[in-house]
Image (cartoon, rainbow, N blue to C red):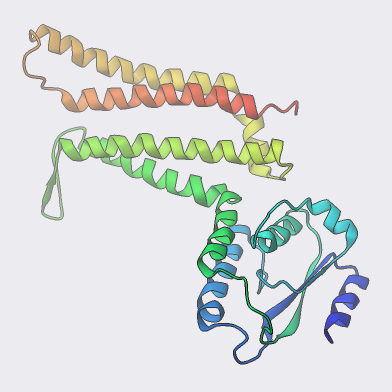
Length: 282
């Protein structure tokens, strides 16, 4: 309680939100369990900094002071322990002035209601849901890129790497990875635009996408990709027909063509959905 004056001074000096940092201050013996102090809290702090580029040393500290004007701007909605993360995240997004004050963390007198795994998951879930780049785009690009490279590599025929032979079955896996990766990336783009238009979140990338990626451009790109895939597929089917539907010798080209066709159709319908949620008129 003696440190409250430090919080008031910060508010009077123009800061909107003041957070008491246990890690920069003093933690009394027995006040914080070992796993909370050296594993849980540091990991959540690191992830928060990594996802949102906000340099706060103790995002889970409950000792805080905030101006009424700033509190009204935040429009907080969390119902659990992730309330602490939401406050810092939104304050950063709104460019509010945040300060930290070292505090003394004393041993609790009453019984703690903290559930380590449940509450840690709530914090982590909040960070993932509000960081679509790391939740969707990064893994989507990785999977899609790996799948695309695998398909192109195996299109001419079996390949040897590291003393092992990779053949048609690996190409099938690559096709699934390519489609899965693109679908995850689409979800990430949808999440960014949805957050901008419906959650009032400032996102320069989303604004740029809405201006550049139009419904017509998306449909055109999807049609071109699907058309290339359809041409390859039809060519294989014609050869198969000329061979009286005997042994199928061009299964690689058929798989490649079908994958591009499905990807093109995904792009077309994703473009319609993108146009629906990304209308600038909102």
